[in-house]
Length: 256
Image 1 (cartoon, one colour):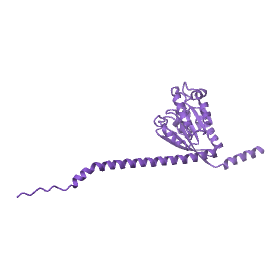
Image 2 (image 1 turned 180 degrees about the horizontal axis):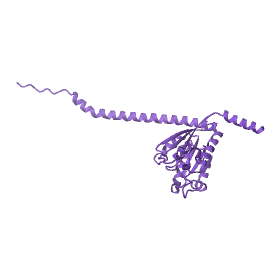
Image 3 (image 1 turned 60 degrees about the vertical axis):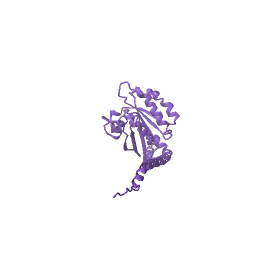
Image 4 (image 1 turned 30 degrees about the vertical axis):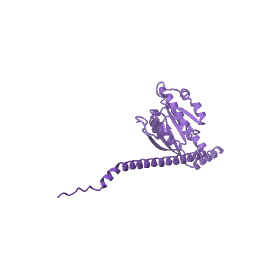
Protein backbone atom coordinates (compact mmCIF):
# COMPACT_ATOMS: atom_id res chain seq x y z
CA UNK A 1 0.00 0.00 0.00
CA UNK A 2 2.79 2.39 0.96
CA UNK A 3 4.64 1.56 -2.27
CA UNK A 4 1.51 2.30 -4.32
CA UNK A 5 1.03 5.68 -2.61
CA UNK A 6 4.69 6.55 -3.18
CA UNK A 7 4.38 5.72 -6.88
CA UNK A 8 1.21 7.82 -7.17
CA UNK A 9 2.89 10.78 -5.46
CA UNK A 10 5.92 10.45 -7.74
CA UNK A 11 3.68 10.33 -10.83
CA UNK A 12 1.64 13.33 -9.61
CA UNK A 13 4.82 15.32 -8.99
CA UNK A 14 6.08 14.63 -12.53
CA UNK A 15 2.66 15.46 -14.01
CA UNK A 16 2.62 18.83 -12.21
CA UNK A 17 6.06 19.81 -13.46
CA UNK A 18 5.93 22.58 -16.08
CA UNK A 19 6.72 21.83 -19.70
CA UNK A 20 10.20 23.20 -20.34
CA UNK A 21 11.46 24.39 -23.70
CA UNK A 22 15.05 23.42 -24.35
CA UNK A 23 17.39 24.09 -27.27
CA UNK A 24 20.29 21.76 -28.04
CA UNK A 25 22.97 22.01 -30.69
CA UNK A 26 24.38 19.02 -32.53
CA UNK A 27 27.89 19.63 -33.85
CA UNK A 28 30.83 17.65 -35.20
CA UNK A 29 32.85 17.36 -38.38
CA UNK A 30 31.24 16.81 -41.75
CA UNK A 31 30.36 13.14 -42.34
CA UNK A 32 30.32 12.37 -38.61
CA UNK A 33 26.68 11.25 -38.80
CA UNK A 34 24.89 14.21 -37.21
CA UNK A 35 21.95 14.33 -39.61
CA UNK A 36 21.53 10.54 -39.51
CA UNK A 37 21.39 10.79 -35.72
CA UNK A 38 18.82 13.58 -35.79
CA UNK A 39 16.66 11.73 -38.29
CA UNK A 40 16.84 8.58 -36.20
CA UNK A 41 15.74 10.49 -33.08
CA UNK A 42 12.89 12.01 -35.08
CA UNK A 43 11.74 8.59 -36.26
CA UNK A 44 12.86 8.94 -39.87
CA UNK A 45 15.20 6.64 -41.76
CA UNK A 46 18.85 7.59 -41.15
CA UNK A 47 19.97 6.13 -44.48
CA UNK A 48 20.84 8.04 -47.68
CA UNK A 49 21.39 11.33 -45.86
CA UNK A 50 22.82 14.30 -47.76
CA UNK A 51 25.40 16.55 -46.03
CA UNK A 52 23.89 19.47 -44.14
CA UNK A 53 24.61 22.83 -45.75
CA UNK A 54 24.03 25.49 -43.10
CA UNK A 55 21.69 23.95 -40.56
CA UNK A 56 18.50 21.99 -40.10
CA UNK A 57 16.13 22.01 -37.14
CA UNK A 58 13.83 19.47 -35.55
CA UNK A 59 11.32 19.80 -32.72
CA UNK A 60 10.31 16.88 -30.53
CA UNK A 61 8.69 16.07 -27.22
CA UNK A 62 10.68 14.18 -24.59
CA UNK A 63 8.79 13.75 -21.32
CA UNK A 64 8.14 17.23 -19.89
CA UNK A 65 10.54 18.79 -22.38
CA UNK A 66 9.83 20.44 -25.71
CA UNK A 67 13.19 20.02 -27.40
CA UNK A 68 14.58 21.89 -30.39
CA UNK A 69 17.74 20.41 -31.89
CA UNK A 70 19.82 22.41 -34.34
CA UNK A 71 21.84 20.13 -36.61
CA UNK A 72 24.73 22.38 -37.67
CA UNK A 73 26.82 21.70 -40.77
CA UNK A 74 30.34 20.50 -40.05
CA UNK A 75 32.29 21.55 -43.14
CA UNK A 76 35.36 23.72 -42.54
CA UNK A 77 33.83 26.73 -44.28
CA UNK A 78 30.64 26.62 -42.25
CA UNK A 79 31.79 25.82 -38.71
CA UNK A 80 31.97 29.53 -37.95
CA UNK A 81 28.16 29.58 -37.76
CA UNK A 82 28.24 27.29 -34.71
CA UNK A 83 29.01 30.20 -32.40
CA UNK A 84 25.76 31.91 -33.42
CA UNK A 85 23.84 29.17 -31.60
CA UNK A 86 25.89 28.86 -28.40
CA UNK A 87 23.99 31.48 -26.38
CA UNK A 88 20.58 29.78 -26.69
CA UNK A 89 21.85 26.23 -26.21
CA UNK A 90 21.19 24.37 -22.94
CA UNK A 91 23.56 21.58 -23.92
CA UNK A 92 25.75 20.18 -26.68
CA UNK A 93 25.60 16.92 -28.62
CA UNK A 94 29.01 16.37 -30.22
CA UNK A 95 29.02 13.58 -32.81
CA UNK A 96 32.32 11.86 -33.58
CA UNK A 97 33.09 9.51 -36.47
CA UNK A 98 34.88 6.80 -34.48
CA UNK A 99 36.00 5.07 -37.67
CA UNK A 100 37.79 8.11 -39.15
CA UNK A 101 41.03 7.91 -37.19
CA UNK A 102 42.83 10.25 -39.61
CA UNK A 103 40.54 13.14 -38.58
CA UNK A 104 40.65 12.65 -34.82
CA UNK A 105 43.03 15.57 -34.33
CA UNK A 106 40.74 17.81 -36.40
CA UNK A 107 37.81 16.59 -34.32
CA UNK A 108 39.73 17.41 -31.15
CA UNK A 109 40.49 20.95 -32.34
CA UNK A 110 36.83 21.49 -33.25
CA UNK A 111 35.78 20.34 -29.79
CA UNK A 112 38.34 22.63 -28.14
CA UNK A 113 36.92 25.60 -30.05
CA UNK A 114 33.40 24.75 -28.91
CA UNK A 115 34.27 24.28 -25.24
CA UNK A 116 36.49 27.37 -25.22
CA UNK A 117 33.45 29.56 -25.81
CA UNK A 118 32.27 31.32 -22.61
CA UNK A 119 28.72 30.62 -23.78
CA UNK A 120 29.35 26.84 -23.74
CA UNK A 121 31.74 26.34 -20.81
CA UNK A 122 29.88 24.83 -17.87
CA UNK A 123 27.06 23.36 -19.97
CA UNK A 124 26.54 19.57 -20.28
CA UNK A 125 28.07 17.79 -23.27
CA UNK A 126 26.97 14.48 -24.76
CA UNK A 127 29.59 12.86 -26.99
CA UNK A 128 28.26 10.26 -29.42
CA UNK A 129 31.09 8.02 -30.61
CA UNK A 130 29.29 7.12 -33.83
CA UNK A 131 29.85 4.47 -36.53
CA UNK A 132 30.73 1.68 -34.13
CA UNK A 133 29.36 -0.71 -36.75
CA UNK A 134 32.40 -0.05 -38.96
CA UNK A 135 35.51 -2.18 -38.85
CA UNK A 136 38.39 -0.47 -37.06
CA UNK A 137 36.19 2.01 -35.19
CA UNK A 138 37.81 3.31 -32.01
CA UNK A 139 36.45 2.06 -28.71
CA UNK A 140 35.00 4.40 -26.10
CA UNK A 141 38.31 4.46 -24.20
CA UNK A 142 40.29 5.19 -27.38
CA UNK A 143 37.97 8.06 -28.35
CA UNK A 144 38.36 9.56 -24.88
CA UNK A 145 42.15 9.31 -25.18
CA UNK A 146 42.30 10.65 -28.77
CA UNK A 147 40.23 13.71 -27.88
CA UNK A 148 41.84 14.27 -24.45
CA UNK A 149 38.20 14.37 -23.44
CA UNK A 150 38.60 14.06 -19.69
CA UNK A 151 41.11 16.93 -19.60
CA UNK A 152 38.95 19.14 -21.84
CA UNK A 153 35.68 18.79 -19.96
CA UNK A 154 37.39 19.22 -16.60
CA UNK A 155 39.11 22.41 -17.76
CA UNK A 156 35.80 23.88 -18.89
CA UNK A 157 33.70 22.45 -16.03
CA UNK A 158 31.38 20.61 -18.41
CA UNK A 159 29.55 17.51 -17.24
CA UNK A 160 30.10 14.94 -19.97
CA UNK A 161 28.79 11.57 -21.05
CA UNK A 162 30.15 9.52 -23.96
CA UNK A 163 28.02 6.90 -25.71
CA UNK A 164 29.42 4.53 -28.38
CA UNK A 165 26.68 4.14 -30.99
CA UNK A 166 25.69 3.56 -34.59
CA UNK A 167 23.17 6.07 -35.93
CA UNK A 168 22.23 4.02 -38.99
CA UNK A 169 21.13 0.96 -37.00
CA UNK A 170 17.52 2.13 -36.58
CA UNK A 171 15.11 4.97 -35.99
CA UNK A 172 12.28 5.92 -33.66
CA UNK A 173 11.70 3.14 -31.11
CA UNK A 174 14.35 1.02 -32.84
CA UNK A 175 17.06 3.68 -32.62
CA UNK A 176 20.38 2.65 -31.09
CA UNK A 177 19.70 2.48 -27.35
CA UNK A 178 22.94 4.32 -26.61
CA UNK A 179 21.67 7.42 -28.46
CA UNK A 180 18.41 7.33 -26.52
CA UNK A 181 20.29 6.78 -23.26
CA UNK A 182 22.61 9.70 -23.99
CA UNK A 183 19.73 12.05 -24.82
CA UNK A 184 17.92 11.10 -21.60
CA UNK A 185 21.12 11.75 -19.64
CA UNK A 186 21.55 15.18 -21.23
CA UNK A 187 17.96 16.23 -20.50
CA UNK A 188 18.22 14.88 -16.95
CA UNK A 189 21.31 16.99 -16.26
CA UNK A 190 19.62 20.05 -17.77
CA UNK A 191 16.51 19.45 -15.62
CA UNK A 192 18.59 19.30 -12.42
CA UNK A 193 20.08 22.75 -13.09
CA UNK A 194 17.32 24.19 -15.26
CA UNK A 195 16.69 27.46 -13.40
CA UNK A 196 20.36 28.48 -13.36
CA UNK A 197 20.85 27.43 -16.98
CA UNK A 198 17.72 29.23 -18.09
CA UNK A 199 18.79 32.44 -16.35
CA UNK A 200 22.22 32.22 -17.97
CA UNK A 201 20.71 31.61 -21.41
CA UNK A 202 18.31 34.54 -21.11
CA UNK A 203 21.25 36.78 -20.20
CA UNK A 204 23.51 35.44 -22.97
CA UNK A 205 20.84 35.70 -25.67
CA UNK A 206 20.03 39.28 -24.64
CA UNK A 207 23.72 40.18 -24.87
CA UNK A 208 24.07 38.46 -28.24
CA UNK A 209 21.03 40.24 -29.68
CA UNK A 210 22.42 43.58 -28.51
CA UNK A 211 25.81 42.72 -30.04
CA UNK A 212 24.22 41.68 -33.35
CA UNK A 213 22.11 44.85 -33.42
CA UNK A 214 25.21 46.98 -32.81
CA UNK A 215 27.04 45.18 -35.65
CA UNK A 216 24.04 45.75 -37.91
CA UNK A 217 24.09 49.49 -37.16
CA UNK A 218 27.84 49.63 -37.76
CA UNK A 219 27.44 47.90 -41.14
CA UNK A 220 24.66 50.30 -42.11
CA UNK A 221 26.86 53.26 -41.15
CA UNK A 222 29.77 51.91 -43.22
CA UNK A 223 27.49 51.49 -46.23
CA UNK A 224 26.16 55.05 -45.78
CA UNK A 225 29.70 56.48 -45.65
CA UNK A 226 30.80 54.52 -48.73
CA UNK A 227 27.80 55.78 -50.69
CA UNK A 228 28.42 59.31 -49.47
CA UNK A 229 32.09 59.16 -50.52
CA UNK A 230 31.17 57.75 -53.93
CA UNK A 231 28.59 60.48 -54.39
CA UNK A 232 31.13 63.13 -53.43
CA UNK A 233 33.73 61.77 -55.89
CA UNK A 234 31.13 61.64 -58.66
CA UNK A 235 30.18 65.26 -58.00
CA UNK A 236 33.84 66.33 -58.15
CA UNK A 237 34.26 64.59 -61.51
CA UNK A 238 31.14 66.17 -62.97
CA UNK A 239 31.91 69.71 -61.79
CA UNK A 240 34.17 70.73 -64.77
CA UNK A 241 31.58 69.44 -67.21
CA UNK A 242 28.85 71.39 -65.46
CA UNK A 243 30.95 74.56 -65.62
CA UNK A 244 31.58 74.06 -69.33
CA UNK A 245 27.89 73.44 -69.95
CA UNK A 246 26.87 76.67 -68.22
CA UNK A 247 29.59 78.82 -69.81
CA UNK A 248 28.21 81.78 -71.86
CA UNK A 249 28.64 81.25 -75.62
CA UNK A 250 31.19 83.44 -77.40
CA UNK A 251 29.55 85.96 -79.76
CA UNK A 252 31.24 86.15 -83.16
CA UNK A 253 31.20 89.52 -85.01
CA UNK A 254 28.67 89.80 -87.80
CA UNK A 255 30.27 90.68 -91.09
CA UNK A 256 28.41 92.60 -93.77
